[in-house]
Length: 64
Image (cartoon, rainbow, N blue to C red; front, side):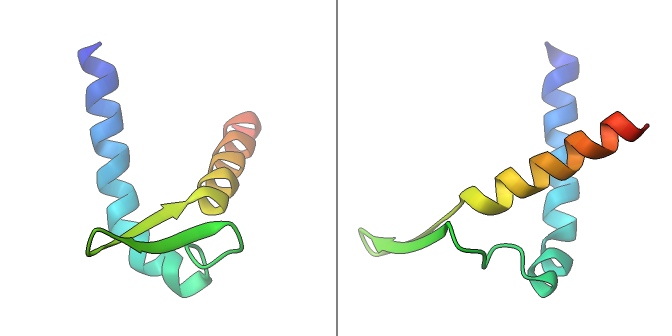
């Protein structure tokens, strides 16, 4: 269990580091990525970007 928490933590750090690069490529601005304002805060739900990146990660894992 501790190993999975560590892996998730590292994945979040990597995603956070690649976020500016991914934004320049257009990820986070795809149709299906929702941005809205609620209770005075801006919320962002990257549904399409998450599905696309999950597909790419799955495809890469099958290649290796």
